[in-house]
Length: 451
Image (cartoon, rainbow, N blue to C red; front, side):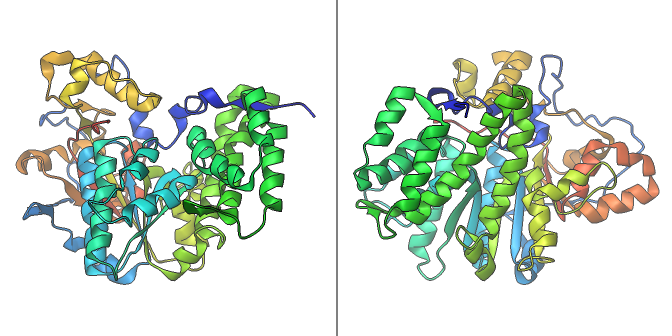
Protein backbone atom coordinates (compact mmCIF):
# COMPACT_ATOMS: atom_id res chain seq x y z
CA UNK A 1 0.00 0.00 0.00
CA UNK A 2 1.27 3.47 -0.83
CA UNK A 3 2.59 5.42 2.16
CA UNK A 4 0.43 8.54 2.35
CA UNK A 5 1.52 11.14 4.85
CA UNK A 6 0.71 14.46 6.47
CA UNK A 7 3.76 16.52 7.48
CA UNK A 8 3.69 17.37 11.18
CA UNK A 9 5.52 20.68 10.76
CA UNK A 10 2.86 22.19 8.48
CA UNK A 11 -0.28 20.76 9.99
CA UNK A 12 -1.80 24.05 11.08
CA UNK A 13 -1.24 25.73 7.71
CA UNK A 14 -2.65 23.30 5.16
CA UNK A 15 -6.36 24.02 5.41
CA UNK A 16 -6.48 27.16 7.52
CA UNK A 17 -8.35 29.07 4.85
CA UNK A 18 -11.33 26.70 4.88
CA UNK A 19 -11.69 25.78 8.53
CA UNK A 20 -14.14 27.12 11.05
CA UNK A 21 -15.06 30.35 9.38
CA UNK A 22 -18.37 31.84 8.38
CA UNK A 23 -18.58 32.43 4.61
CA UNK A 24 -18.99 36.19 4.95
CA UNK A 25 -15.43 36.50 6.16
CA UNK A 26 -13.97 35.55 2.78
CA UNK A 27 -15.24 38.52 0.83
CA UNK A 28 -12.08 40.59 1.30
CA UNK A 29 -10.07 42.00 -1.59
CA UNK A 30 -8.06 45.10 -2.35
CA UNK A 31 -10.98 46.46 -4.34
CA UNK A 32 -13.48 45.86 -1.54
CA UNK A 33 -12.66 48.96 0.45
CA UNK A 34 -16.11 50.25 1.29
CA UNK A 35 -16.49 51.96 4.62
CA UNK A 36 -19.53 51.61 6.86
CA UNK A 37 -21.61 54.76 7.20
CA UNK A 38 -25.25 55.77 7.65
CA UNK A 39 -25.91 56.61 4.02
CA UNK A 40 -28.45 54.06 2.90
CA UNK A 41 -28.68 52.88 -0.69
CA UNK A 42 -32.03 52.83 -2.53
CA UNK A 43 -33.39 49.30 -2.75
CA UNK A 44 -36.67 47.50 -3.30
CA UNK A 45 -36.58 46.40 0.35
CA UNK A 46 -37.99 49.43 2.10
CA UNK A 47 -37.77 48.20 5.67
CA UNK A 48 -37.34 45.13 7.83
CA UNK A 49 -39.00 44.86 11.20
CA UNK A 50 -36.17 44.98 13.72
CA UNK A 51 -35.99 45.82 17.40
CA UNK A 52 -33.15 47.32 19.37
CA UNK A 53 -31.11 45.07 21.63
CA UNK A 54 -30.72 47.58 24.43
CA UNK A 55 -28.13 47.65 27.20
CA UNK A 56 -29.13 47.78 30.85
CA UNK A 57 -26.51 48.09 33.60
CA UNK A 58 -23.74 47.28 31.17
CA UNK A 59 -25.37 44.10 29.85
CA UNK A 60 -27.61 43.40 26.89
CA UNK A 61 -31.31 43.00 27.60
CA UNK A 62 -31.91 39.38 26.68
CA UNK A 63 -35.48 39.00 27.88
CA UNK A 64 -36.45 38.06 24.30
CA UNK A 65 -34.70 34.75 24.99
CA UNK A 66 -36.88 33.86 27.99
CA UNK A 67 -39.37 31.74 26.05
CA UNK A 68 -36.64 29.75 24.32
CA UNK A 69 -34.86 29.21 27.65
CA UNK A 70 -38.06 27.71 29.06
CA UNK A 71 -39.05 25.59 26.07
CA UNK A 72 -35.93 24.60 24.14
CA UNK A 73 -33.23 22.02 24.81
CA UNK A 74 -30.48 23.47 22.59
CA UNK A 75 -29.59 27.11 22.01
CA UNK A 76 -27.38 27.60 18.96
CA UNK A 77 -25.24 30.71 18.53
CA UNK A 78 -23.97 31.06 14.97
CA UNK A 79 -21.28 33.71 14.77
CA UNK A 80 -18.97 35.71 12.58
CA UNK A 81 -15.64 34.57 14.02
CA UNK A 82 -13.09 36.72 15.88
CA UNK A 83 -15.38 39.69 16.52
CA UNK A 84 -15.13 41.06 20.05
CA UNK A 85 -18.61 42.60 20.19
CA UNK A 86 -20.18 39.34 19.07
CA UNK A 87 -18.17 37.42 21.65
CA UNK A 88 -19.40 39.79 24.37
CA UNK A 89 -23.03 39.15 23.45
CA UNK A 90 -22.40 35.40 23.33
CA UNK A 91 -21.02 35.54 26.85
CA UNK A 92 -24.06 37.48 28.03
CA UNK A 93 -26.34 34.85 26.45
CA UNK A 94 -24.41 31.92 27.99
CA UNK A 95 -24.61 33.28 31.52
CA UNK A 96 -28.11 34.73 31.17
CA UNK A 97 -29.45 31.34 30.05
CA UNK A 98 -27.82 29.71 33.07
CA UNK A 99 -29.15 32.35 35.44
CA UNK A 100 -32.70 32.10 34.11
CA UNK A 101 -32.62 28.36 33.48
CA UNK A 102 -30.13 25.52 33.21
CA UNK A 103 -27.85 25.06 30.19
CA UNK A 104 -24.87 23.35 31.78
CA UNK A 105 -23.31 22.02 28.54
CA UNK A 106 -21.41 24.52 26.40
CA UNK A 107 -20.20 23.37 22.98
CA UNK A 108 -17.31 25.21 21.35
CA UNK A 109 -16.09 24.78 17.77
CA UNK A 110 -12.64 23.62 18.86
CA UNK A 111 -10.72 20.36 18.45
CA UNK A 112 -12.14 17.52 20.54
CA UNK A 113 -8.80 16.84 22.26
CA UNK A 114 -8.91 20.19 24.07
CA UNK A 115 -12.06 19.22 26.01
CA UNK A 116 -10.56 17.83 29.26
CA UNK A 117 -7.92 20.56 29.41
CA UNK A 118 -10.60 23.26 29.16
CA UNK A 119 -12.68 21.66 31.89
CA UNK A 120 -9.64 21.19 34.14
CA UNK A 121 -8.98 24.92 33.81
CA UNK A 122 -12.53 26.19 34.36
CA UNK A 123 -12.87 23.93 37.41
CA UNK A 124 -9.58 25.14 38.86
CA UNK A 125 -10.08 27.59 41.72
CA UNK A 126 -9.54 31.20 40.57
CA UNK A 127 -6.27 32.57 41.87
CA UNK A 128 -4.64 29.17 42.25
CA UNK A 129 -1.93 27.87 39.94
CA UNK A 130 -4.11 27.30 36.88
CA UNK A 131 -2.06 29.16 34.29
CA UNK A 132 0.04 26.16 33.16
CA UNK A 133 -3.21 24.69 31.81
CA UNK A 134 -3.97 27.96 30.08
CA UNK A 135 -0.54 27.90 28.46
CA UNK A 136 -1.18 24.38 27.14
CA UNK A 137 -4.45 25.62 25.63
CA UNK A 138 -2.87 28.61 23.86
CA UNK A 139 -3.11 27.02 20.37
CA UNK A 140 -6.90 27.05 20.79
CA UNK A 141 -7.34 30.10 23.04
CA UNK A 142 -4.96 32.67 21.63
CA UNK A 143 -6.83 35.96 22.02
CA UNK A 144 -7.70 38.26 24.87
CA UNK A 145 -11.38 37.54 24.22
CA UNK A 146 -11.15 33.73 24.13
CA UNK A 147 -9.01 33.61 27.26
CA UNK A 148 -11.49 36.01 28.86
CA UNK A 149 -14.31 33.53 28.23
CA UNK A 150 -12.34 30.78 29.97
CA UNK A 151 -11.72 32.97 32.99
CA UNK A 152 -15.40 33.92 33.20
CA UNK A 153 -16.42 30.26 33.01
CA UNK A 154 -13.91 29.51 35.76
CA UNK A 155 -15.39 32.23 37.96
CA UNK A 156 -18.94 31.04 37.22
CA UNK A 157 -18.11 27.48 38.25
CA UNK A 158 -16.48 28.72 41.43
CA UNK A 159 -19.44 30.96 42.31
CA UNK A 160 -22.10 28.40 41.27
CA UNK A 161 -20.98 24.96 42.49
CA UNK A 162 -24.47 23.50 41.97
CA UNK A 163 -24.83 24.94 38.45
CA UNK A 164 -21.44 24.29 36.94
CA UNK A 165 -20.91 24.55 33.19
CA UNK A 166 -19.12 21.76 31.31
CA UNK A 167 -17.42 22.54 28.00
CA UNK A 168 -17.49 20.09 25.09
CA UNK A 169 -15.17 20.77 22.15
CA UNK A 170 -17.13 19.54 19.17
CA UNK A 171 -14.77 19.80 16.20
CA UNK A 172 -12.28 17.37 14.68
CA UNK A 173 -8.57 17.75 15.33
CA UNK A 174 -7.41 21.02 13.77
CA UNK A 175 -4.06 21.70 15.44
CA UNK A 176 -2.40 18.32 15.12
CA UNK A 177 0.70 19.50 16.97
CA UNK A 178 -1.51 19.97 20.06
CA UNK A 179 -3.09 16.57 19.43
CA UNK A 180 0.29 14.87 19.26
CA UNK A 181 2.08 16.59 22.14
CA UNK A 182 -0.75 17.03 24.64
CA UNK A 183 -2.90 13.94 24.01
CA UNK A 184 -1.09 11.16 22.16
CA UNK A 185 2.46 11.46 23.51
CA UNK A 186 1.51 11.50 27.25
CA UNK A 187 -0.64 8.37 26.83
CA UNK A 188 2.05 6.45 24.96
CA UNK A 189 4.65 7.49 27.55
CA UNK A 190 2.35 6.19 30.28
CA UNK A 191 2.24 2.86 28.46
CA UNK A 192 6.03 2.84 28.22
CA UNK A 193 5.88 2.68 24.44
CA UNK A 194 8.96 3.97 22.62
CA UNK A 195 8.31 2.68 19.12
CA UNK A 196 5.92 5.52 18.19
CA UNK A 197 8.52 8.17 19.01
CA UNK A 198 11.13 6.35 16.94
CA UNK A 199 8.74 6.08 13.98
CA UNK A 200 7.83 9.78 14.11
CA UNK A 201 11.45 10.87 14.52
CA UNK A 202 12.39 8.80 11.50
CA UNK A 203 9.52 9.88 9.23
CA UNK A 204 9.00 13.50 10.42
CA UNK A 205 5.40 13.09 9.33
CA UNK A 206 2.31 11.01 9.93
CA UNK A 207 2.11 7.99 7.65
CA UNK A 208 -0.33 5.13 7.17
CA UNK A 209 1.97 2.88 9.17
CA UNK A 210 2.17 5.35 12.08
CA UNK A 211 -1.60 5.91 12.17
CA UNK A 212 -2.21 2.16 12.05
CA UNK A 213 0.29 1.62 14.86
CA UNK A 214 -1.32 4.28 17.06
CA UNK A 215 -4.70 2.65 16.49
CA UNK A 216 -3.38 -0.77 17.43
CA UNK A 217 -1.64 0.38 20.61
CA UNK A 218 -4.65 2.31 21.88
CA UNK A 219 -7.12 -0.49 21.11
CA UNK A 220 -4.94 -3.02 22.96
CA UNK A 221 -4.14 -0.78 25.94
CA UNK A 222 -5.55 -1.83 29.33
CA UNK A 223 -8.87 -0.13 30.05
CA UNK A 224 -7.69 1.36 33.34
CA UNK A 225 -4.57 3.13 32.04
CA UNK A 226 -4.53 6.87 32.83
CA UNK A 227 -1.80 9.50 32.69
CA UNK A 228 -0.76 10.08 36.28
CA UNK A 229 -0.80 13.87 36.41
CA UNK A 230 -3.68 14.13 33.90
CA UNK A 231 -6.14 11.32 34.71
CA UNK A 232 -8.55 12.53 32.05
CA UNK A 233 -6.10 11.25 29.42
CA UNK A 234 -7.26 7.63 29.33
CA UNK A 235 -8.08 4.94 26.79
CA UNK A 236 -11.60 6.12 25.92
CA UNK A 237 -10.33 9.69 25.45
CA UNK A 238 -7.52 8.49 23.14
CA UNK A 239 -9.97 6.44 21.10
CA UNK A 240 -12.05 9.54 20.50
CA UNK A 241 -8.96 11.65 19.81
CA UNK A 242 -7.81 9.24 17.10
CA UNK A 243 -11.30 9.11 15.59
CA UNK A 244 -11.25 12.90 15.24
CA UNK A 245 -7.61 12.95 14.14
CA UNK A 246 -8.20 10.51 11.28
CA UNK A 247 -10.86 12.74 9.69
CA UNK A 248 -8.21 15.13 8.52
CA UNK A 249 -5.51 12.55 7.91
CA UNK A 250 -7.76 10.32 5.79
CA UNK A 251 -9.04 13.27 3.74
CA UNK A 252 -5.47 14.29 3.01
CA UNK A 253 -4.40 10.75 2.10
CA UNK A 254 -7.38 10.32 -0.23
CA UNK A 255 -6.76 13.71 -1.86
CA UNK A 256 -3.27 12.57 -2.85
CA UNK A 257 -4.92 9.85 -4.94
CA UNK A 258 -7.77 11.97 -6.29
CA UNK A 259 -5.90 15.25 -6.66
CA UNK A 260 -5.13 17.94 -4.08
CA UNK A 261 -8.11 20.01 -5.23
CA UNK A 262 -10.37 17.31 -3.79
CA UNK A 263 -9.15 17.83 -0.22
CA UNK A 264 -11.57 20.59 0.78
CA UNK A 265 -14.69 18.67 -0.26
CA UNK A 266 -13.44 15.41 1.24
CA UNK A 267 -12.45 17.03 4.50
CA UNK A 268 -15.59 19.12 4.97
CA UNK A 269 -17.94 16.22 4.32
CA UNK A 270 -16.09 13.97 6.76
CA UNK A 271 -15.69 16.78 9.26
CA UNK A 272 -19.42 17.50 9.46
CA UNK A 273 -20.23 13.81 9.84
CA UNK A 274 -17.72 13.57 12.69
CA UNK A 275 -19.04 16.67 14.47
CA UNK A 276 -22.50 15.12 14.43
CA UNK A 277 -21.05 11.86 15.80
CA UNK A 278 -19.27 13.80 18.54
CA UNK A 279 -22.54 15.39 19.60
CA UNK A 280 -24.74 12.31 19.40
CA UNK A 281 -22.53 9.29 20.17
CA UNK A 282 -22.77 8.31 23.84
CA UNK A 283 -19.06 7.43 23.81
CA UNK A 284 -18.32 11.10 23.13
CA UNK A 285 -20.87 13.80 24.11
CA UNK A 286 -24.18 12.13 23.26
CA UNK A 287 -25.05 11.31 26.84
CA UNK A 288 -24.50 14.92 27.93
CA UNK A 289 -26.58 16.28 25.06
CA UNK A 290 -29.44 13.86 25.81
CA UNK A 291 -29.52 14.46 29.56
CA UNK A 292 -28.94 18.23 29.75
CA UNK A 293 -29.78 21.46 27.98
CA UNK A 294 -26.90 22.84 25.95
CA UNK A 295 -25.60 25.93 24.18
CA UNK A 296 -23.55 25.40 21.02
CA UNK A 297 -21.30 28.15 19.66
CA UNK A 298 -19.78 28.05 16.17
CA UNK A 299 -19.79 29.48 12.68
CA UNK A 300 -23.18 30.63 11.44
CA UNK A 301 -23.39 27.89 8.79
CA UNK A 302 -23.14 25.23 11.48
CA UNK A 303 -26.24 26.53 13.24
CA UNK A 304 -28.71 26.70 10.33
CA UNK A 305 -32.05 25.08 11.10
CA UNK A 306 -34.13 26.13 8.06
CA UNK A 307 -33.59 25.63 4.33
CA UNK A 308 -34.18 28.67 2.17
CA UNK A 309 -35.67 26.75 -0.75
CA UNK A 310 -33.95 25.16 -3.78
CA UNK A 311 -30.19 25.63 -3.78
CA UNK A 312 -29.90 25.48 0.00
CA UNK A 313 -29.93 21.71 0.36
CA UNK A 314 -26.47 21.67 1.94
CA UNK A 315 -27.98 23.12 5.13
CA UNK A 316 -29.03 19.57 5.97
CA UNK A 317 -25.38 18.48 6.22
CA UNK A 318 -24.62 20.63 9.26
CA UNK A 319 -25.10 19.87 12.93
CA UNK A 320 -27.72 22.57 13.48
CA UNK A 321 -30.09 20.96 11.01
CA UNK A 322 -29.34 17.46 12.30
CA UNK A 323 -30.10 18.29 15.93
CA UNK A 324 -33.20 20.30 14.97
CA UNK A 325 -34.72 17.72 12.61
CA UNK A 326 -33.06 14.29 12.78
CA UNK A 327 -31.90 13.59 16.33
CA UNK A 328 -34.80 12.41 18.49
CA UNK A 329 -33.64 13.83 21.87
CA UNK A 330 -33.41 17.38 20.44
CA UNK A 331 -35.78 17.29 17.46
CA UNK A 332 -38.08 20.33 17.55
CA UNK A 333 -36.27 21.66 20.62
CA UNK A 334 -33.55 23.76 18.98
CA UNK A 335 -33.45 27.57 18.86
CA UNK A 336 -30.91 29.13 16.52
CA UNK A 337 -29.50 32.65 16.86
CA UNK A 338 -27.30 34.18 14.18
CA UNK A 339 -24.90 36.92 15.31
CA UNK A 340 -23.46 38.98 12.48
CA UNK A 341 -21.66 42.30 12.03
CA UNK A 342 -21.76 44.33 8.83
CA UNK A 343 -18.31 45.87 9.25
CA UNK A 344 -15.18 45.66 11.34
CA UNK A 345 -12.04 47.45 12.39
CA UNK A 346 -8.81 46.14 13.89
CA UNK A 347 -7.01 46.87 17.17
CA UNK A 348 -4.64 49.81 16.92
CA UNK A 349 -1.65 47.60 17.65
CA UNK A 350 -2.30 45.78 14.35
CA UNK A 351 -1.81 49.08 12.50
CA UNK A 352 1.56 49.64 14.14
CA UNK A 353 3.08 46.22 13.54
CA UNK A 354 2.86 43.25 11.22
CA UNK A 355 0.75 40.69 13.02
CA UNK A 356 1.81 37.14 12.19
CA UNK A 357 -0.69 34.29 12.39
CA UNK A 358 -0.98 30.85 10.82
CA UNK A 359 -4.70 31.46 10.36
CA UNK A 360 -4.96 32.67 6.77
CA UNK A 361 -8.52 33.94 7.05
CA UNK A 362 -7.79 36.03 10.13
CA UNK A 363 -4.62 37.36 8.53
CA UNK A 364 -6.63 38.26 5.43
CA UNK A 365 -9.06 40.32 7.48
CA UNK A 366 -6.17 42.18 9.10
CA UNK A 367 -4.26 42.81 5.88
CA UNK A 368 -7.48 43.68 4.04
CA UNK A 369 -8.26 46.41 6.54
CA UNK A 370 -4.71 47.76 6.49
CA UNK A 371 -4.58 47.75 2.69
CA UNK A 372 -7.82 49.72 2.55
CA UNK A 373 -7.32 52.21 5.34
CA UNK A 374 -3.78 52.10 6.70
CA UNK A 375 -3.02 54.04 9.85
CA UNK A 376 -4.64 57.24 8.58
CA UNK A 377 -8.18 56.02 9.19
CA UNK A 378 -7.86 54.18 12.48
CA UNK A 379 -11.33 53.73 13.91
CA UNK A 380 -13.00 53.42 10.53
CA UNK A 381 -15.11 50.33 9.88
CA UNK A 382 -14.64 48.27 6.74
CA UNK A 383 -17.70 46.58 5.26
CA UNK A 384 -17.23 42.81 5.14
CA UNK A 385 -19.42 42.04 2.14
CA UNK A 386 -20.89 45.31 1.03
CA UNK A 387 -24.55 46.01 1.64
CA UNK A 388 -27.29 43.97 0.00
CA UNK A 389 -30.94 45.10 -0.13
CA UNK A 390 -31.67 43.18 3.09
CA UNK A 391 -28.82 44.65 5.13
CA UNK A 392 -29.21 48.11 3.56
CA UNK A 393 -32.78 48.15 4.90
CA UNK A 394 -31.33 47.94 8.43
CA UNK A 395 -29.04 50.97 8.09
CA UNK A 396 -31.77 53.54 8.97
CA UNK A 397 -32.40 51.64 12.22
CA UNK A 398 -28.74 51.90 13.12
CA UNK A 399 -28.69 55.60 12.30
CA UNK A 400 -31.68 56.25 14.56
CA UNK A 401 -30.35 54.00 17.28
CA UNK A 402 -26.77 55.16 17.92
CA UNK A 403 -25.49 52.00 16.21
CA UNK A 404 -26.82 49.60 18.82
CA UNK A 405 -27.50 46.01 17.68
CA UNK A 406 -30.91 45.11 16.34
CA UNK A 407 -32.72 41.79 16.35
CA UNK A 408 -35.23 40.35 13.94
CA UNK A 409 -37.11 37.08 13.64
CA UNK A 410 -34.92 35.63 10.93
CA UNK A 411 -36.96 32.81 9.40
CA UNK A 412 -40.33 34.45 10.08
CA UNK A 413 -39.35 37.93 8.88
CA UNK A 414 -37.56 36.71 5.74
CA UNK A 415 -40.48 34.47 4.82
CA UNK A 416 -42.88 37.40 5.19
CA UNK A 417 -40.57 39.65 3.16
CA UNK A 418 -40.36 37.14 0.31
CA UNK A 419 -44.16 37.04 0.00
CA UNK A 420 -44.19 40.78 -0.61
CA UNK A 421 -41.05 40.84 -2.74
CA UNK A 422 -40.19 37.45 -4.33
CA UNK A 423 -37.03 38.83 -5.96
CA UNK A 424 -35.44 39.18 -2.51
CA UNK A 425 -34.78 35.44 -2.55
CA UNK A 426 -31.75 36.23 -4.72
CA UNK A 427 -30.27 38.26 -1.85
CA UNK A 428 -27.50 36.27 -0.11
CA UNK A 429 -28.34 37.80 3.26
CA UNK A 430 -32.01 36.91 2.85
CA UNK A 431 -30.95 33.26 2.60
CA UNK A 432 -28.51 33.60 5.52
CA UNK A 433 -31.08 35.27 7.78
CA UNK A 434 -33.84 32.84 6.76
CA UNK A 435 -31.84 29.92 8.21
CA UNK A 436 -32.17 31.02 11.86
CA UNK A 437 -34.93 31.70 14.39
CA UNK A 438 -33.39 34.99 15.51
CA UNK A 439 -30.82 37.23 13.85
CA UNK A 440 -28.79 39.78 15.79
CA UNK A 441 -27.18 42.34 13.50
CA UNK A 442 -24.43 44.64 14.70
CA UNK A 443 -23.27 47.46 12.43
CA UNK A 444 -19.68 47.29 13.63
CA UNK A 445 -17.24 45.14 15.59
CA UNK A 446 -13.54 45.00 16.37
CA UNK A 447 -11.33 42.00 15.63
CA UNK A 448 -9.99 39.98 18.55
CA UNK A 449 -6.84 41.16 20.25
CA UNK A 450 -4.51 38.24 19.67
CA UNK A 451 -2.03 37.39 22.41
